Image 1 (cartoon, rainbow over the protein chains, first blue to last red):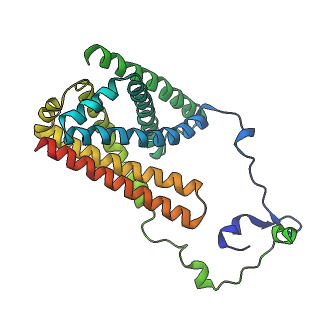
Image 2 (cartoon, each protein chain N blue to C red):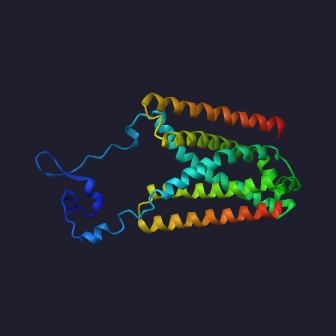
Image 3 (cartoon, rainbow over the protein chains, first blue to last red):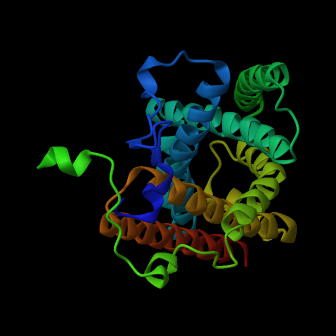
Length: 143
Length: 134
């Protein structure tokens, strides 16, 4: 042991010999249950939203800067690339929102039974699809 | 050589104080966790409100944004949204960095860099919104 944190990794086996505890295998050997995919996607969507927040920052700063700067930002948001980014932002946001509410619910200690855990995961997937598509229908009809 | 290093063994020669230092409770362990949840809960209504507001500003000119932010409620909600968003973002990405960057110096540098970028972006958003709305 070089560090106290190693204390959990080194232990005596039934013969009293010091052994290194086995580690669980890495990601690629596991199945992909929906709950695991959601957990990974929650983190990934959070990182993606960090980039989306820079987009919001640019939009606000451009509005405060000048009429031309804001017109440029608005033009970009309306372009194909801008719309693609905004659609990705919408999906990431809706997913992170729904998944985050599921996490807050589980923080209260509920929903950990396997059946509940998987059902709530699929509810998150469904709600993300409905909210993302719904937002864009409203945006395209009323925007 | 590498063999003997990897074989399970105990060679700790640190004093009990040296071992305890920096590993015990600082009485603030849950603060990060709570702040993350609190900002998350605040962001649920704020984000939904922001999406509705932004949809009405599709293709709008700068004047429309000034009109939007001149009302007290949107201005206050935007300031709250900016504060909650950047605080939540910074807390979340900090955990991601701490999970994947193991080198101590690189970890410290990237967490501090993240905090600097988030703080400066948040300030830029605050100032922009106030300039437009006041």
